[in-house]
Length: 310
Ligand code: PSU
Ligand code: MN
Image 1 (cartoon, rainbow, N blue to C red):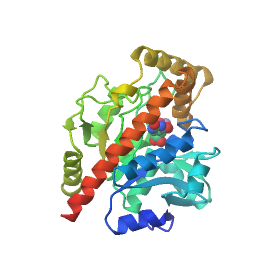
Image 2: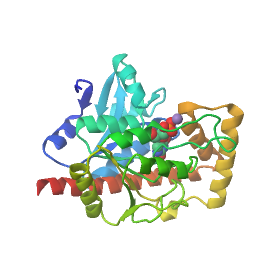
Image 3: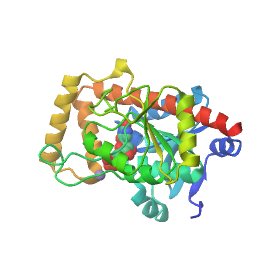
């Protein structure tokens, strides 16, 4: 493997060279998960949240056939202006070789973050196992995020998985693939818009220091090269009303079926339905949960940097 495709911003390169904490942020949630007109302010805010907690943000996207690790204002603007394709890890080779622009998902962001030497990454929700008929999409659909997390030593901080997924099956895959799942101040696996799902987490940590201790130990003493999933429930004041949530979910599933939506379009179409049909309530929830994950990720990155200096 070479790293000729990586273009680190001067700030991120300097932080990594001097052992300062860095948090990776993804671009698909900006380009495909949030509406244009709102996504840029979120991208800017996430970076500020990371800075306020004492870490350096590294938003990641592929622009002009280079993997940009840490974006300029103009690059973040470009990511949020529309027209970027959604790149999973399978798409990195084509996009880099053909000089394309694209937004990176959890799978591709974690891949590039690890190549750049960044160990902590914040997002909204991890991709997972999609529901199949009669409730969901027609085809078998399992996000590459799960495979990549099982084979990439990066900690992903998220609010669990979207309730548009089969949470039971997703939790089982994480177990099978030996990915440690840590509940952050929770005993329940969170369901994105909702703080709890019907499923418990195998482990709970209550402080950034404990999270860092587990991550450090897992990374240095447990073979297998899996990442860690740190799940942080949406802040209680922003949780979606359960009845509204259940209605949106049912409608979303019906929409997928009637429009025959498949593959990588499923998640963006569902999110867009939630945002428009809830008159923005789910949008606020989505933005606030990502911001809180960015804070927690930065606090954990700070602890990890301190540990490596000891
Ligand atoms: N979190 C959000 N919004 C998003 C996503 C995460 O708050 O849009 C994206 C991530 O990029 C994740 C993707 O990798 O959804 C999952 O897509 P798929 O199911 O096609 O793998
Ligand atoms: Mn899929």
